[in-house]
Length: 142
Image (cartoon, rainbow, N blue to C red; front, side):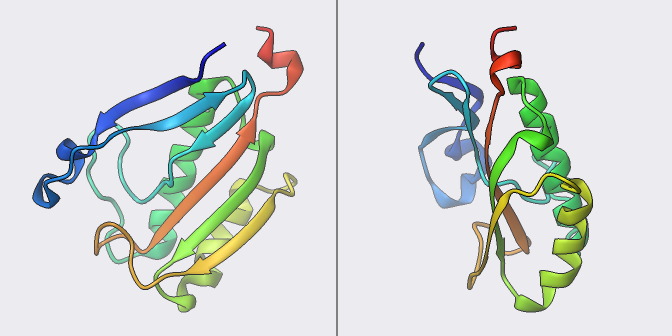
């Protein structure tokens, strides 16, 4: 089975001011059950509209809602997350962001990495959440 790509897009549409031309997608299902999600931010998946501008916890809430939706579209669930990486533009956002993520992932126990970066792809983004998950064998067959 070749890789399955969900929600394909081109960066010229999402970043018109940057004059880019890269074919990407929101999620890749590889080798049948391994899922790689694009880093999720405070942005509506349908409209591309930024939400919770200036509010790191609000952006984390939207990012996690996006993660849940993308996993569902691929046949997975939040409890199937193996690895999560959280990128913050300011270490002071750690506590409010991790509280949001912790609520979404209560009882999941993924491997987690936190990174503070100088910036993300858009200046209004304060947090980005990157996820690797699986589809368990019993759901992979369906």
